[in-house]
Image (tube, rainbow, N blue to C red; front, top):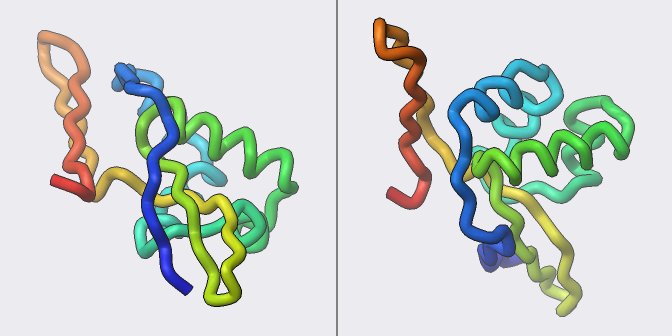
Length: 110
């Protein structure tokens, strides 16, 4: 099995508050952790999270919109391919001060 990363998301301007909101959900955090070790399909993520496929797809969409996850194409040895998802962030830091809340990300491709 080989994986070719192909982020199909448009350029985003991710909102730090939205990113924190997404990470407030247990299912979304589980997806992010699972995809940090390589691309996973929605089916694999459904099994990992023990959630319904509808819930997993909603969380995947939230993570994609927040620029914390990227869509990839995974090619199998038999020539077939499937959509998979991979974390785009390795580290997230939150700073709270008189200027407000700032979120900084360390990307996996940095």
